[in-house]
Image 1 (cartoon, rainbow, N blue to C red):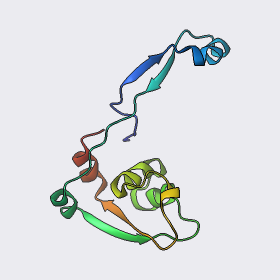
Image 2 (image 1 turned 90 degrees about the vertical axis):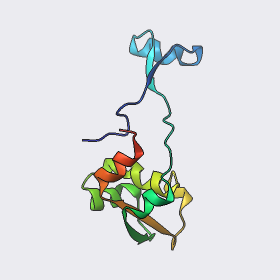
Image 3 (image 1 turned 30 degrees about the vertical axis):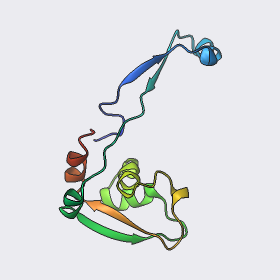
Image 4 (image 1 turned 45 degrees about the vertical axis):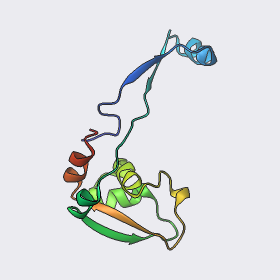
Length: 113
């Protein structure tokens, strides 16, 4: 299964701000994932994919669309990334978003996982 954490760099956090958390957990450091730098697809790459349009409705969520289209709700971030709208708060009712397919090709193009 592909995870948005696969291939991400992990850093050891020893910041004073997190001292209380470390003491509660009995650890010296906290492992945190670095924020990835995802590149966006070119026009040609986008054109080579199957792009299914979806009009945003009341009750829609990225995780629901990912479950319906990819069979895995944890892949919600692929739809958010492709549409360059990181959260559902960036979408209004009636907006059209694109569901990119096939998933394996989209992930390969991302060169992220």
